Image (cartoon, rainbow, N blue to C red):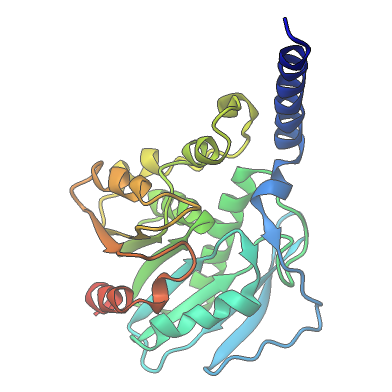
Length: 265
């Protein structure tokens, strides 16, 4: 065997093994990209909002923002993506308050002003349920819509499977997290390595309320085909296709705004 083939036969498997080890033990660093904010940070948005903290059973603090609409007809419970903080995501609340809905947003553990660290998938679900239960004690609202974008789409889907909303809206959703990992790391045994599953395709068929998907055709993070596949698993699932839309810019398209008009009004 030529030396260069011998080197390749040794180096390539070694690189894959090392990458596999990194993914297995440090996958939170590959999935979550939080922006940390000082506990003294002051949010500034061009619309009314309230800020408060909800304490978890293990004594961590979840930072929550409630954006208020005039004469609100309901609440949008918003689960954001895998990066940033409410400093950025809060800017999206206007898409819903302008249509007459209050918006509840929160930062995951380790994001923004929230304390703690994400350690597993169940922790994310438990925190989402805890926040919903606490908000239900504090506010009276009409319709409730669960909204999830990117990473948050799986959390919103699981929550809708456990607590029935009036509607579920998923922006750039994945079929499941395993498929996302296979898309980005096709040569690794992801079924063995991956701790996070987010089985959206398992939960949606059991959710009976209207489900609305929004996805751009040029999404290179979560391929558009994943929403096409999700649409096929339930008659109550609708898909809004944003032609030329990518992963992070869908609300800048007229088609997105018109679709929200249709869904929310």
